[in-house]
Image (cartoon, rainbow, N blue to C red):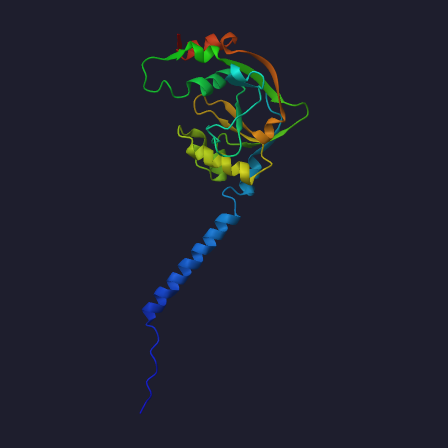
Length: 231
């Protein structure tokens, strides 16, 4: 009499188990890659790094902080959050861009009236910022096709919602510690804006300062953008 051997698993069962093992192993590999690799590798970033002096730029800020014109505090902004563990200083070579980015932004979208409270002007000051003599900063250039070249969503610099920019700013700050800041095009004016991480602020110096209401270009900016001042 022939002895009956013990039946092994059906081919379909083997295939299912094998697929499950592969899925589990694959998930583990993906998790490990996520941990060990930066979301934005160095190779595509390197060609977009500018090692340059910081151009004379305007920063518009509260008069309350006149004693520390380069000071920064934790706050939610395009490239940082209040709880992110770092701060960012924003400045623009063009006065109009500094004004629009700081005070106007999207407040007039779908509005018939274009008015700003006078106190928003009188409570602020402008300061001219440049780099210390002989000092060059390392800046990541996100203008033009910069985001596309490094695989970042264009929302990083173009979206009204800052979620993508904040996530990007955090990653670059953490994974590329030699980068002092970012340069990008304002979505409001198209002109350059500089975002300098707190670790790069020490390479900057403050120059001339003045009350925002007294700036020589303010009347032209208000006229160009049809902005009225109200009490």
